[in-house]
Image 1 (tube, helix red, strand yellow):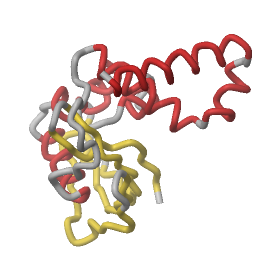
Image 2: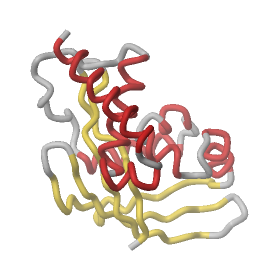
Image 3: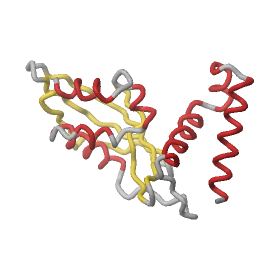
Length: 173
């Protein structure tokens, strides 16, 4: 009940702030990541996936590097819906073009993704955030091969009582 009241107070505070500040002023005021996490948390609670355990500091069960490899294994198996669940809502909104249909359409152009396991390196890890570098190679159905040295930012996410790493950002190195 206390967590619910805290979340409700935070949500109301953001709503009131948004009435007095434009969105251009609100995001720097609250911080984009804070707003994203509050929105994500509110959505999770709305659909009944709030972590109501007293111990919210439980760490993710798997290694961040394993998450990257598992994600691309799902892509290669054409299990796009499961792979989509490895992405944070923020990442889902940004890439590709804000929706699942475009995401699936992009991956349908890709025959396979090769993850160079020797290049898969954990660069930094905090309690709820990790950075992983990896060399990827996309084999497209039209025969092209695209090398993609990438840096991923992952965040620890709670789904019911289960902690997992989710991909929050990908940049080309």
